Length: 299
Image 1 (spheres, rainbow, N blue to C red):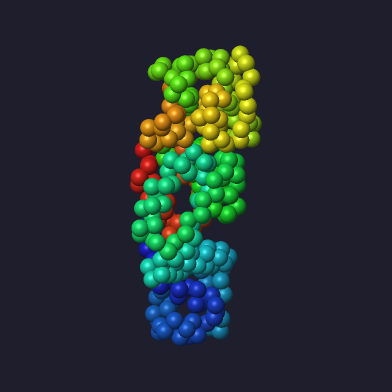
Image 2: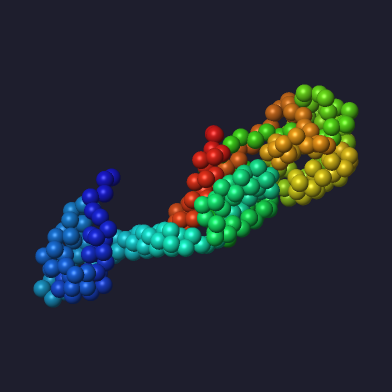
C-alpha cells in the first residue's frame, strides 16, 4: 500500500489529538487553521478512514482515530529516536554496541569487523557476550544485546534470523596424529578414536546428537567440555580428536593443529545474525550489523 502522507501530516494529527481544537492545534505547530485542516483531510483520504468527529466546539477521535493515534505516536517516537541517534553519532561518535555470539562465530566474524568498525567510530565501544547458543538467543530476546550471531535452531517467533554463511563440522587433531594425513574421516571412524565431546548444554552437541542419532559410538569420550575453545586446547595437548565447527579452527596454518573433513554424513550448520523482530536498532548497532552482513553474507 503506497504511503500518500508525510511526517508533517502526522505532526498535524498529533497536535489536533493533543488540543482537540483546530485553532489551538494550528497555533502550536505554526500553521493556519485552513492549512491544518487540509493536512488532516489529506491524512484521512490517504488512510481511507475518518479520524475525527467534529462539532462546532470540540474535535474528538473516532474509534479508528484512537487506534491510529497509538500507532502514529510509536512511529514518530521511533523516527525522532533515529534522527537524534544519527545526529549524536555524527557529532560525537560515541556509544556502546552489545553483540551476543557463540564463541566460534566470535572468533571467525568479529576481530576483523571490529577492527574496521573502530576505524570509523573510534569512540564507540563494542561489548561481546560470547556464550552458548541458548544464552545468545536469550540475550537478544531480552534486549540485553543489540543483536546476536549464532546458528539456526529452535528460534522464538519474535526472533528474526538472517543467514550469513554455512559451516561444516570437521575433526580437529594434532599434526602428529596417526590419521592426520587422511583427507577425510567418517563419523564411525571418528568415534573409534580417542575423542573429546561437548556436554549436553551445548548447542553444537544438541545439533550433532540430532544429525547423528543413527550412529552409536563404539566407545565413550575421553572427556567432555562446555566450549569448543576448551576442546581445541585438549586436542592441542594430545588428549584426543574433537568434532568442531570449521570456523572455530585457526584461520592461518597452525604449528600443532590440523583438521580432517568428516563424512557419512557431512554435517552442516547455518550461521546467521539474529535480532528481535520489530526492534528499532540504534544507528551505531545498525552500522555494525551492516559491516557483518556486507562482509560475510554468502547464503
